[in-house]
Image (cartoon, rainbow, N blue to C red):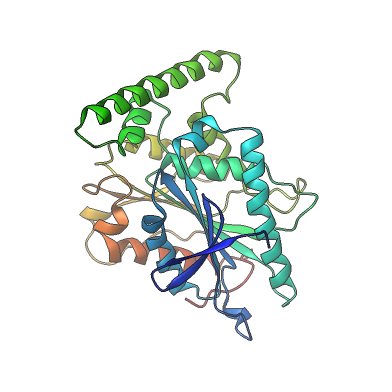
Length: 334
């Protein structure tokens, strides 16, 4: 375990391994290892999200999976668009160390290990992509990603989206706030146009477009070995809303379509949640590996607050079905 300090959040004690990386440890495993599905839940927060808000989602997973380690990885404009390369490798190595420790512990109990990945917005997906693209396959054994949940993501790498998301935290009305907003607007615009210029040299200079591309490649989800790459992505659930001013519905739709092309399957299953009456019924994941649930009215990253019960019912039923698939590491006892 890496050196860390503890912080109190409500009635839970979290380990802080870095200002962006927190772990909520489970209750002792004891004899209940067969019920521990998954071993790890990784929450990648939306850009500049405060820990206390992302932790509300961790609490729900804690209730579903009391024996899972819940990791919270926060994102910021700097971590997504400024600190790349060496900084990404350093943060990835820190997370890898904890994942490997968990895998070793659980494998000592005779269990294969698994991970659920839940990303929010472009910020969370860039953070995941940065982490997974720097995995050290030869040195570590990691829990296998068995399911992905993408909330309000991914969008396109447009300047208006970047400005809107970055300026959200600067809401004051003083002259100093105005100066700050002007400075941030100038900086973000300069970085964006630099990326546009560099994009002429290659496809990976715009981090959002890079994230959109690599998250639909099986390589980014194969954590065990460079030679152990599935021909399909882990089952995926998109949760998005038409009222999102940062993430266009067509951006999510296109990414889901591309995911299914990677899976060599037909189009993703789609349900309009606010126009559906009665129980939600999906095609089985064994035939359609990608699902897209769309709402009409919630704002960006607010679906879970606006439609709380419906949101978590979808997540829970999705993960329950994932656990029944032939290649699932262990059965779920939700």
